[in-house]
Amino acid sequence: MPALPVWGYSGDYGPQAWAQMELAFALCGSGAAQSPIDLTGGTSADLADLRVNYMPAQLALANDGYTVRADYPAGSSLQVDGVDYALLNFEMHHPSEHSVNGVPFAMELQLIHQSAAGSIAVLSVFATAGAPNPAYQLLWDKLPAQAGAAEPVPAAFNAASLLPADRRTARYNGSFTAPPCTEGVRWLLFVQPVELSAAQIEAFAAIFPNNSRPLQPAAGRVLQLDSKSR
Image (tube, rainbow, N blue to C red):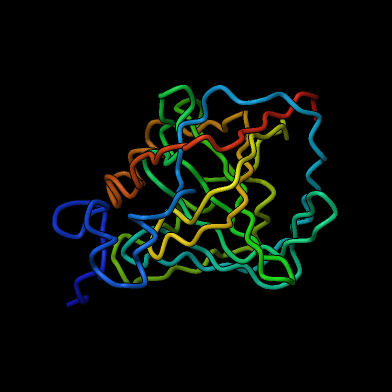
């Protein structure tokens, strides 16, 4: 029997209780720059290009009881504003954690990166219901349903295939969306969602009906919106 989680997304373990569970989780309740937020308003700006340099890799999808995650081997990176961030892993949330003008998306994929100095950048992809997505299906074929399970993806997989064609982003500074809710995270969220079929969305929802943190106050933070096409 898997051990009960230290925290969760509902009931006594839910987000409203995170800050009281452990001293290390205090920022989940007291932080001034928490994520996710509603992406509304914002300032149009000529933002620096994202340089995505992801390489094909042998991956395994792991169900850690909170999400489905894949750790990425060294060698893939994201560059923004002259800083290189190594791709560490990606994870999936249903429904989306962030929303746009108060409306959530069906899902959100988050790719977590870290610079040599230790700073974190998260590249986020929204998913909406539409046509089946062949790139995502390569992962969906191996979604582990049970907590603690892991499934290898049979062929080398490039995370670049998970990104939308339009590389414009909304950007703000926030936190991790799960305990310990560490702040100082740079969020870069693609404006264009990818499409997943209803069946693909339902397949993930059958494993995680809700693994998303509720929206947090924007608290006057600057939201930048990319003004030029990519």
